[in-house]
Length: 293
Image 1 (cartoon, one colour):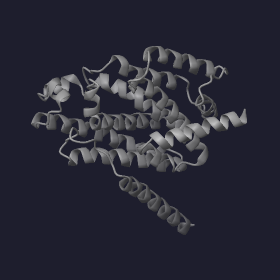
Image 2: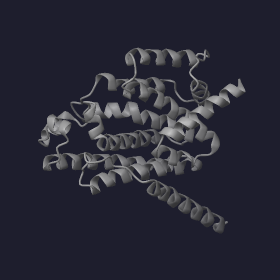
Image 3: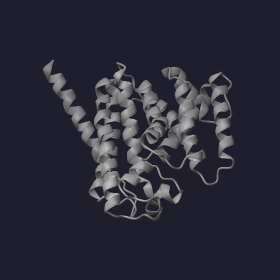
């Protein structure tokens, strides 16, 4: 059983290394036991994402029904043959993570099968909560935190990151006939759905995007407060994630909101620089603390 569990954690690690991109640069700062747990969470979230995003998935709605059954059975002690599940269940039990979070995550990811338009920001915010903020709430259970305020800041940071993803991926999503920006706001700024599908860059689009960036930044400003409530060994991970996604938001703005010509991303050098900056600051803080003793 121990070998089976270890194999499961190792698979989750491999999935994260291969697919996590921005997340992986933050996860490596965690202590081993928390890092392994986060890898298990990421692997499960990725498993759900692949069902909704892959064009090769057969009967995705039925597969989500099976994922829920698989999760329920596993939580009841009847592990399935899915190799990532042992690590997931071990993580849930070890860190006492509410089971409901995982069902909400599944609900959110499944929305991509049936909902490709959002009437207003409240609808979009509800979606962001289920696919991103829930992951934040799961994560702080692993990170360790103090005080109920941490929950709201984790929710806000998740929304900020998901809004950034949405802006960055407008072209990719439009190619799948998905438009996540609120319909009433597109109408407010005079930007048509056909414009989005055709990748039209005009002044109306820039004003619409300026509005979206400003809102995302307000959520980042709230989410950064989470750092004050986390255990010390998890601050680096959260800080790096905040910096990485804030920088993507800055890059979108710096590029004149042009997300159609090419996908906005950070280079490996930029990511490593953000990590190095954190480690330098962390090291200097430790030295200062030692000097005060």
